[in-house]
Length: 318
Ligand code: UDP
Image (cartoon, rainbow, N blue to C red; front, side, top):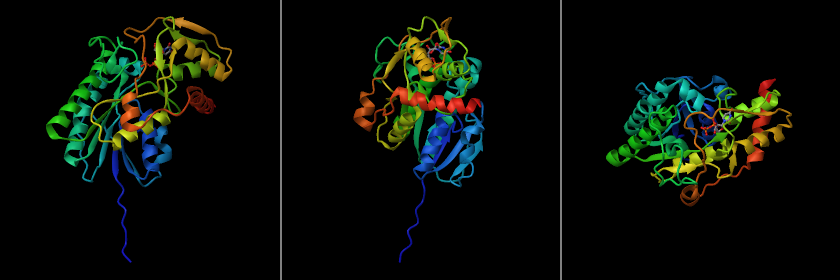
């Protein structure tokens, strides 16, 4: 009787202890991959991956991706998710944000090249800046202020996309670019400054919800399990051009704050604070490309995703 040896494929996930990165690690382990999680905990959190550390297919390496990274074993995929990603974080860490997107992407492309691995970049809807086209298709080039406070993130990711495409064209590498729109779910840091954790935390502690500006700016929120499935489909695809991943269900921020008040049954008030500089007025993904090429679209309704997220924040608060 011949013995069949099944060799697991290995995936490097940078930023694997962050919000989306940790969901991705968990998902890949469940699919039967070995996962090498790289994080320097700048904005990541050990608690996001503490449940994975007993899994023999999960390897955690404390490393800053802006420094070169070498590893002797075979790697099949490199998923580059390491970066500060909330507006508060990248305003606080502007140079680290620029370095994670530029030097970090260069180093991880180098790793993928030497390993003959597929490279996937976690890019962002921020490459569209304050968009003048609505909803945003991948063909839109964006409207970004390069020297504004958000420019450090937007331009780092735009550079990251440019170098990723250059490696694809020059070295013929399989490269993928996921343009990720606002994503929420369990594992977000309660003080990362983003609207979802801010509103939920405020609502659950009977504090006023801080809506910036008049709340007429729009966002489209995708539940993290949908997003991770989209990333996975992109990783396995032969698509090299950027793909928007997000949920096209669009809300004004004021509507969204009211939704959270309702779902938490909170009696908190809403107060208005100044709108941050360069805060985009609209944001909604055109996901025709993901629908057509990846056969992907979000499945989780916003109310359902929010209920799960609220439950998680409730437990965390205890
Ligand atoms: N926002 C808000 N109150 C908060 C945090 C954010 O009104 O406490 C607004 C923010 O100005 C933006 C929207 O909510 O217009 C989404 O912000 P978030 O930080 O979640 O993500 P962004 O899409 O700006 O990256």
